Image 1 (cartoon, rainbow, N blue to C red):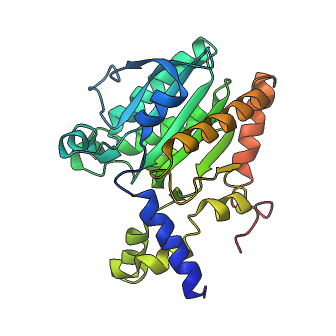
Image 2 (cartoon, rainbow, N blue to C red):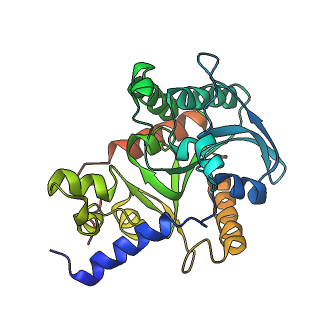
Image 3 (tube, rainbow, N blue to C red):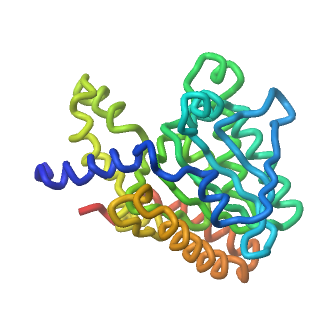
Length: 274
C-alpha cells in the first residue's frame, strides 16, 4: 500500500485538473493557433457542443484541431454538455479527420472530459460504436496525430480522440480508465474512497510517462490556472518539437509506429509505475 503522502499528491492532482479556473480547450486554441474556423455537425444527427473542431493554422501551417470543451458558466456548461460528448460528437470528429487525411493536414486533438455522455439517448444513437469507429480511424490515419490531455482524461470518452503518434500531458492533468469516484464505488462500494482510488489508478502524468503511456509532460508549476500564458507557450513549444519530429517520416512508417506504440500497452515492454 502506498503511503498517505503519495495518495494525497495524486488526489491533489485530481483537484487541480478539475479546477474551475483551469484553461480549457478554446483558451488554448486562441493562444496557440490562428485563423481557427470551427466546423459543425456530423451529417447524421446534429452538432455536438462538447466536441469542437475545425481548420486552423499552426505557425502558418494549415492543420486540423479537435477538442473537448467544458464551459465555465452554467449556460456554457449546458451548451457544451460539461465536456461529455454524444455519439454525434465523435462522428463529427471522424468527419474532420477524414478531411485532414484528404488534404494531408496534421491533426491535433485536445482531451478534457470526465467521459462520454452516458445518457439513454446517446446509447440509442450508438455511443459505443461511435467511439470504436473513432479508435479504428485514428489508428490508421496516415497524417501525424498529436494528442494533448489538458485536464481530465476519462475513460473511452478521452480515448475516442486519444489514439495518436505522441501523447502529451500537462503536469496536473489526469488520464484514467475511470474516475477515482467511479473506481471507489466499484471496489469499495463508496465514493468516499476516491482519494485511495486515485493512487491505485496511477492516473498522474509522471507515472504515466514512466509507464510509456505518454511521451511528454509539460510542467505547469502549481497549476495552469495560475500561469496560463506560460503554460500555453511551453505547450506550443512541445507541439512544435513533436510535429517537427513526425512530419518528415514516411506516412506508412509513421502509421506502423503508431500501431506498434499501441500494441506494447499491456505487454512486458511497458514500464511499471513505482
